[in-house]
Image 1 (cartoon, rainbow, N blue to C red):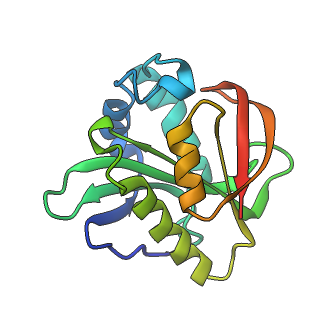
Image 2 (image 1 turned 60 degrees about the vertical axis):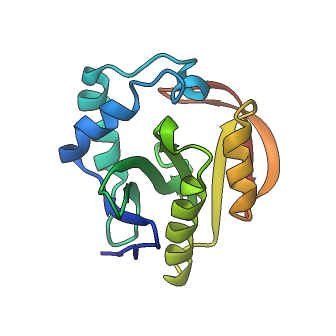
Length: 177
């Protein structure tokens, strides 16, 4: 199992069904969900019967794939998560050496560098494992905050595409290193 070392401020742990309350809590803020669902919050049923099974499907601790819970070391407060999984995981063209990196944080932690710090720590740890050719990320074209994080992670714009999944449908920018 790959371990992600703590940073000065943050601690990391792979999420599982035991974290369903945290996943649900995060998705209750319409502002957090704005660029994913136009602000529609997730029901508890969606978390339990859709999100948790999807997380279980792509979680592989030996590769570092999964949803990494991000907490503050000082207070053990839950900030949100960092997603790591192969691009196109749920499609026929799954790319195991091209990892998707994504994030979702509570609004009170926005603008504090936590998403960048957490994503970078996980990205660098996985890079050292030498099992990754590239990292990729997507965001709605209007999600300027996430695009800014992508750039801080050293990802470069590749293209704008139409994307659709169970949370979102629309135009996204695709970045990779």
